[in-house]
Image 1 (cartoon, rainbow, N blue to C red):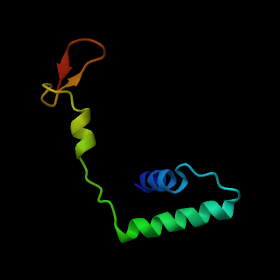
Image 2 (cartoon, helix red, strand yellow):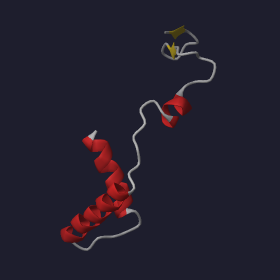
Image 3 (cartoon, one colour):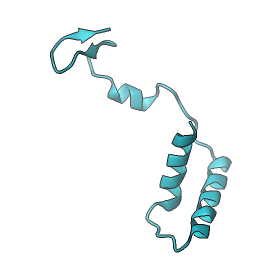
Length: 72
């Protein structure tokens, strides 16, 4: 889960910015982490992303290769 948090912090801290030195990157990460801790985003397992990835009508089934066959 640490990698997921790092990816989120990186995206938020460096979005549209161009740091001039490593100290700036560290400071931006620190500021971003502090702001996130004030208003944290909860992690929801099996949330919106999983529902979006589910194939409508498959009913929990998975495709077998590129055929029309399914498995549970």
